[in-house]
Image (spheres, rainbow, N blue to C red):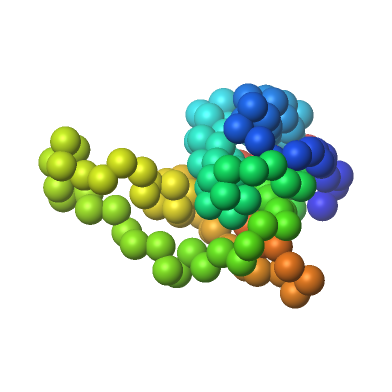
Length: 142
């Protein structure tokens, strides 16, 4: 890792725009193309929204976001102190159903997995969770 950029704050829905701005600026500083930055901002927005609504149950709580390059890969880590989350227990969305008949929500984990090359959800030993997101071959070589 050449140098990680970090943001620590209270997870709150009012913080979503500053979080997206942080991810976008970090990506730009590493030379990541704008279309990929847009995807990653959406992914981080979905992940943080899930932490706030489901992990912290609508309350605020500590959140750390780290953006770094690992070679040509962009890696984003999101850590919280919320209740444990098991992504394997999340049902896949029913994309074959007409939009008007689908339940509201349920697309977050699906989008996270579709818009990244790697998404690893894990519970931390001392409590909380970490989501490690990777987009491969998007950081230009110097």
